[in-house]
View: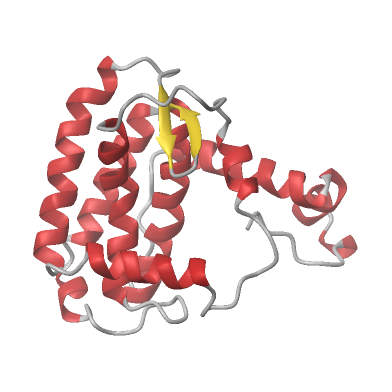
Length: 208
């Protein structure tokens, strides 16, 4: 998981360094109400936050959960774009990107380089505080890997460039995580039919 995360972050770095990003920085992104700048900031936080969380004291008063449980805790009725959580996500993304594209990718790459040294020395079951949850390190990295892969696609679509390929280990881990979330939300049969029997699909199936 460590190297899937780091290698996918390297892919994201290439897109964050694209001249197109600087050219289109203030334009709307493919996500409603999200500028490209804020989306880039949100993507970068998938790496920046890992370093921030590892700097916090080890959480000791909460039981660790896995990545699927973490994501399911945040799944509810589709929020309106002006609700508090979507609004805060956009604001924090813009705040992360406030220094401009060059400053953002420099901070991203600096954090990525430090994590490349630090993460391989850490036990995968080390607890990490992730917002209001505690996750083992490998599950924390899986949540950030999902964020990297999903928002890498969002940013590429926003810039009208092909979505970069990510390592096979990353695609397998993200596919497994998203499928397990979808099964937990909708049940096995609807997910199986979506994947194998499209003529029997009645409703869209999504992890989030």
